[in-house]
Image 1: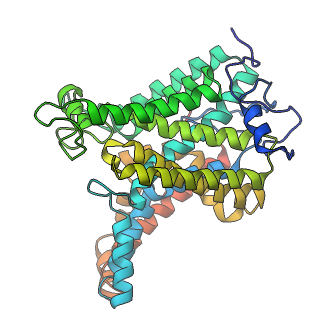
Image 2: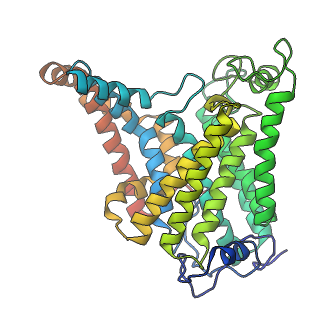
Image 3: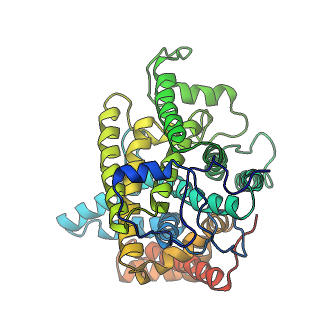
Length: 429
């Protein structure tokens, strides 16, 4: 059994330092420090374990909790409310209608190539999962052992994967109408493999793996011939990832013949999670001031976006097969968002505006699971649907009733998140 000082953990810190650190060392010292070996800061153990990849920690990085909640905020009702708002703006003049069309378009997935705001939500959550891995597993190794950390990672991954199976029909459906790979299942796999890499490799090794994943996926998609299609095709229903799903992925597939969370495309999704690990290492580094971390995140984010767009000229940005260019662009946008959240919440300590995001982020998987099984919007429909919705539509504008339903559903979700947070009730693993 290895101790907390194991040299496999690519993180270091001082027991007396806060997570933000107070040093002013240069960039060269930063990279030397994050790849070195040293005992991490002694943090008090939290009394709860949660199913999310990053359990609540003390001291906390509020920006990470808030950004996780920001992603889930859109999934549990804000997306529907925004679409309804777009409908309300339709036919209200040129400017309002144009704004409505733009807003509505950003909350639909790109049919294939391209990127919209809605296409960022899932990779942003996986990115934040990677950030949280750094804090949660480092603390666990410090307080217990690396062997314990491996066991905890395996246990959480299996439970989250099992929850995904329940979510996608293992209780209500019979085989083969059960979806084996979905959103929760992909999160479980990304968490599992990224955590194992983090526990056993230093920073240089993690970088090599990340580059190998993106380059290797591009090579597979570009040079491996597909029966009846040939090589180098990234088109819908005519690419290697879709073909592998059609041939080898059992059970129900989201799109009939293939799945957007399919077998081969899970590989680059692990790359997205690794980008979160790199960001987590940056936030954990004590030699940098908060504003320096923000500049690193924004600078790296901008560079990744530029590189991803350029790569996208040859290897298109496609969410459904999680292309390497998609990883870079979404990773860059995620880094930019984390930089903004970190600067405002952690550096400037302006946190009140993010309270509901922190609540949601603390129980993100719980809320996602409840929303999928029960649904906050259907509950809201029982309260303000039917005649109430019709009355609002007729007396205000078409779409207002739907907006009310989604807004009430979102309020129910936020109220539940706040209740769980204040009572310290979290889904245990």
